[in-house]
Length: 397
Image (tube, rainbow, N blue to C red; front, side):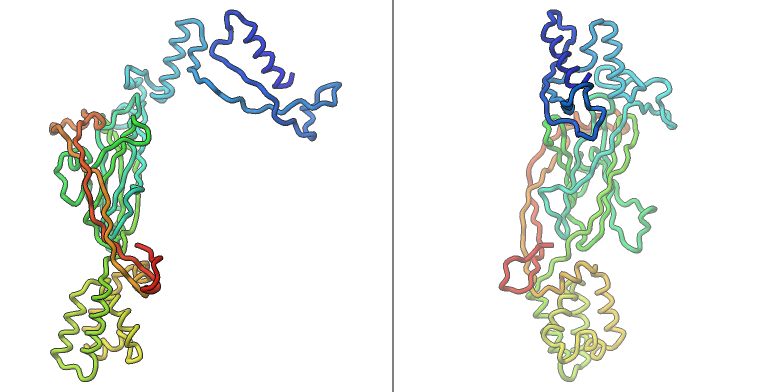
């Protein structure tokens, strides 16, 4: 019997039945296309007409499977099995909004693990573009409606460089509940909680306001439930934007260095040039070198003139600082035109209204914590890089 014929017959039986033997099933059938001619299984005996191809039916009403069962006792057993399978991994029973695990559903630490603890997904906040010192991160609450209860989120952050063993050095750890919501954190970090796209889901956020420019940072997040279990880690690695540069001042310093180098250089002028170049930031030094070579390279480039006027030792101390600039920023700092821009972005700052008792952290549910939130503003300075002063389509980094 072709599939469409079977469904049509089932629908007819449903419509003619007075006691609705097929409870909870509603079927709508229509023919969409035909079986390909190469399919011999689709041919109907004695007819040249090909049977229509089966298509996915449209579902216009969803009901739990156990409602299709007429016997109340069987229905309740089936319901319990489905709830256990969905919320408790089939290793426990659903009691109100939590899972009572079976005796064989405990981990090596003796903690019940029949109710999964999903890992949070850490991501950059889409409404706050990272700058040279400010980065905003967010994640959705992973606490399910039934089962595991999340008591805290722990966020670790560290700056990664060639001198740091990333496996041994874990960086600074911040408890969302104990450090951030309680106000024990510094003014450089602020926490927020709001509603996600679904009203029942909480959206947590953390903004870092005092990071180092042109630095590679690694952020790691995990959830902690009320029994002390840790979820798997979620990681975001990013490099902050390049340091701010006052391009006009950099060009003035390049002119000053050229005048000090020009002609006979006395010991006092040498020391003035050395002190000037050592006092500016590495990004400013890079930009001074760029302007110097752009205007005065015909008299000798910056490196050669520094070695000639200051001597190899002092010149090496100055030029070694340029190695701290990343390849990404060194490319941008060679742009013909750099302009500074200030953006003001809103962020959410939340504080807990209640004090979590010491030693009782695991027994508190983070979602139930009452918080007071207010919207604040943070100023974010950016460099705008372009090919010439006349162009307006410069890009921020």
